[in-house]
Each structure stands twice: as structure tokens, then as C-alpha cells.
Image (cartoon, rainbow, N blue to C red):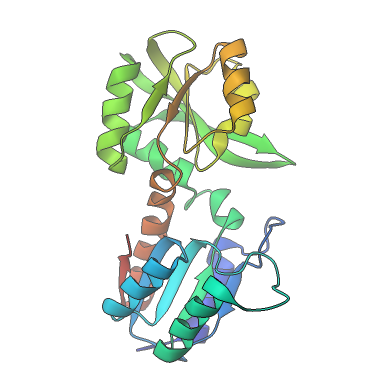
Length: 245
């Protein structure tokens, strides 16, 4: 057993929870049991995720996408159903959204780059003074199809190639989630931009700018950072921590 407050204090410091303005309040969003014996990490605070965490015996769920984005005026419908489950099962919810996205150790982009074996890593995906992704280089150029095969294997996804440039790629940029905002930045010496999903206007810009895209799934591009965080929690507190798919 570990005190909830100990884990929250560690996470607040480790992730630097107030490092970037966000649409939600990062940190502990819902307090359940004061003692934790099993931790779940997940991308979403969905109803299915909460139910799975209950089945797995977790009493702390750490999520990337918040339970509550803006302070609700009323608690009804789906949010009420989620909160009833949390109360009934004494489960806490901790959120790490944008602070995790920009983190030098836990960002999804950093961890995807590690999986791909990229070198010469630089910050990428600048927005309002913060960088939400990274760029780097493969040891040797490969085809877009080979890059897709590698990403599909490592992220357990079925990505989509949007080819607007060369078929052989070596310089890669990664911005998880809706990372298509970085298309114009990628037009400067990046052979392929790997993202989770794209807005229509950004797809048009990518075509105009000749930027290759590999669209790998919003969810799928935002799991590795949570897994990395779970490893740190296990190491720090010697407590079981698992990914809730």
C-alpha cells in the first residue's frame, strides 16, 4: 500500500504539472481511496476505461485525456455515470495532459522516436512557445511503406500514408495526437511527419507544401508516454502499475 498523497506529490513534481497552460486542470481530478495498492494508466478517462480499471482492481487511474476539461456547471449524463462508478469503487483520477506532451522524458513523441531508433533528436511542433513533438533521423533512408510497417508494429496500429513528397524518407518528425498543426514546420527539411490524426485544412496545406504524412491514430500515438510513466511509478513505489487499454 502507498499513500495517494505520496504518489500525487511525486507526479506533480516529476511531470512538472503546471509547466504549460491547458484546457483542463492537470493533477488529481477526483479523490478516492487514500491508500493505493494498484495503479492503472490510460489514454482516456472513458466509461469503458473506468470499468476495466475496476475489473483489474486499480484504485488510482492516471489518464492523459482528462475526466473533466472545464469546470462543469452541472454533473449529468455520462459524466455523472463516471463519477458514480468512481465514488462506488473508491477510485482516484489523476490527469497528465499537455505537461506530459512537452516532457523531455515522458512525451509520446520522445518515446516513439526511441522506438524508431532516431538520432539527432531536436524539439519540434512549436505552438505558443512550447514544443509538442520531436524530430530526428533514421540511420538510413527507408520507404514510406517500410516506415508504416515499423510504426504499425511498434504502436499496434494501422496507419495511413498520405504521400505528398518523396517515397524515400530519412528525416522524421513526430507530433502525437492531432499533430497536423505542425505541417508548415515540417516543410522545412522533414521527409515525413508522423501524427495521430489531422484536421482537413492541415491536410490541404500538407499537399500544397509537399509534406508526407503518416497518420497513426490519436489513441495509438499517445500510449507510450503513459507506459513510460507507469515504469517510473513502479520503480519509485514498488507498486503494480499497468496500462488499461
